Length: 136
Image: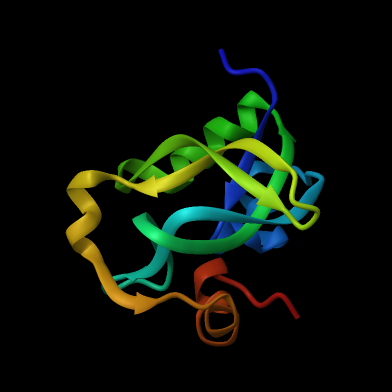
């Protein structure tokens, strides 16, 4: 069983209300960057995936002290399209943190488009339908 851990998110789980809907919890969070991975839209979907790409940087949120039950809920939310991998992310002060991240599974890499994913565009165009209700 996994103890409490850090989780780096770069897509819909960056939005606290979505994370809370998935886990039922709120976690300490800070901005972080993952080196060597690029974020793209998943073809036909409103959410992104990341794949390894030399020189790429992916900005996201590092959630700290995620409990095993919440991690299991996140695994279910991400499904088999993603694999949970241990990565190293860097916070704003330049400190390195080990964290799990959901990387697009090798079989699903062809389903990534070449279009970068934008959190702002997601919030503007897809958040309400993704959540199934208005946050206002």
